[in-house]
Image 1 (tube, helix red, strand yellow):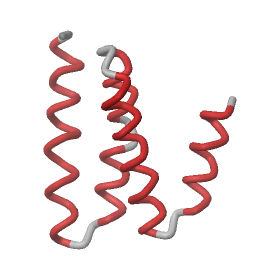
Image 2: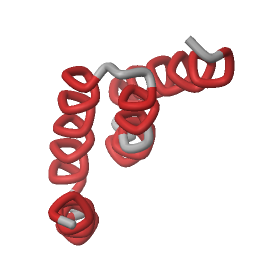
Image 3: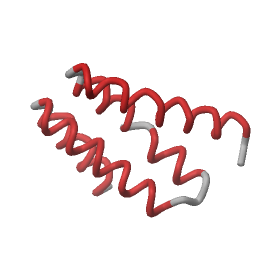
Length: 77
């Protein structure tokens, strides 16, 4: 595992859980959004897909429907 990717993954994984108990859904969503790209680069596609779904669910919970639509449009190509 690349050192920089591993550090990025640890940072993303540490930041999201700290945000939710304090009601910062938007911060948790923002922390989850880039995580799937790192996981994909590490060939961990199943975890990447789960992370993306988590980010989308958090954005929906926050009410950021336009962000969800943008991400889905990007994925659709």
